[in-house]
Amino acid sequence: MGQSGFEAFSDGVIAIIITITVLELKVPHDESIEALAPLTPVSLHACHKVTGPMLWANLPRLFWLSLIPFATGWMGENHFTASPSALYGVVLLMAAIAYWILQQLSITSQGRDSLPSKAVGCDWKGKASPVLYLIAIATAFWSQ
Picture 1 (cartoon, rainbow, N blue to C red):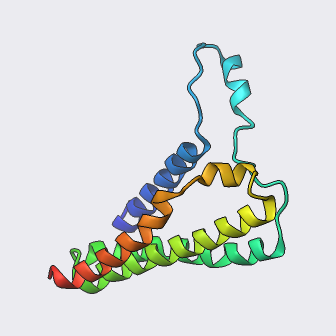
Picture 2: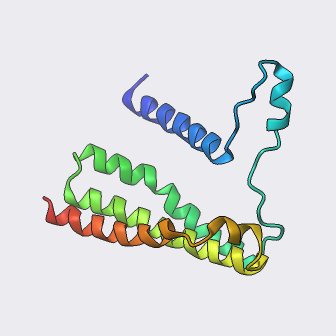
């Protein structure tokens, strides 16, 4: 297996780990196979309806997320130099903005008392992340 095959395998494994983390699978207290049965339908179904604007807002989010492996690879290949590191920050910033837009559309369509609204809460991380990404982008050039 070459380097690119190893990287692809690693990316796949990491994607699976992230998926499992997002699904919040809880470890059963029983050792039997039957104890796994209640875990099968676990997923996040907080939105009861999906609107057209939500579908359109999801496309840019998926686009920016699809660029993460490229930006990560370019940054690693060039030993974290300024331009690749800044591009990585831009990709993360744009993905965060796209996610925020989708999140707001979801809350709007479901209502302020909905599960998505309660899950988001005050969203201090969502508000701080873009600011930190902007600082990181600027720091990429300043620290070189």
